Image (cartoon, rainbow, N blue to C red; front, side, top):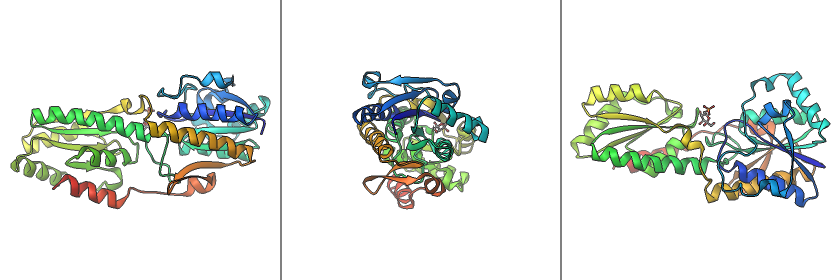
Length: 321
Ligand code: F6P
């Protein structure tokens, strides 16, 4: 490859800027040109393409969000739209492309690879819901942000001897909820992967806790289950204990990335460039068993993963002793 394009797509995630910076600087170090594509695939279709040099990524490693902006581009599933995007890449001399995003963004990269643009995907999402990897850019920062917020809610919940339902992001996945469940010592964690929770059992658990002298009852509810406000009303009516719902929302997507997100995103960005320099295409970078690895995108998209059963079990044991 001679010219490497880079874009961010889907929901933003802290650490995306570190990945962009690594792509730009590693590419320049390898003697390649770099072009930044603004607003994901939508911006590519509008030819929002800028030249990037080492200086254009100064002062960004510590910033949340993505300097390239991001978008969800639903029309990219149309074959003629994909063809138009490949033609635009060719017109701008982009023969290698790094796509930072989730599974949906990788599908776009897969189509562009079939149309002659060498593509590499980097897992960028706070949700951790990409099957081929144990790490996604942004998860570490998001889960730390959520953990700190839940600690704060817990303080006021204890003072008022309330039950608090705290809803965390994750779309259909419960990783943020499960990690916070353990890290915050929540009394209950509701995960979409375990949508078999019994509200009467939850009510009994709250009442039992009160009898044992518990001063609060923290329920972490994953967004994939949702309905926290109505759940709070029902629980208050059934237990007689004041119950409040807090939806953490988009605060979980922002903020300065943690050290782990900066270092792993930088490594993945550099690796993407090295893969392109070796002639690789249609690959996605992941982190597994302590190593940075890459997979064929088709294989990566066919993989599945669920929550760690042992982690779920210890969450319940440790938080209810
Ligand atoms: O995928 C990241 C994520 O924050 C999910 O956790 C959440 O379901 C979704 O994006 C929210 O998307 P939007 O910012 O478009 O409302």
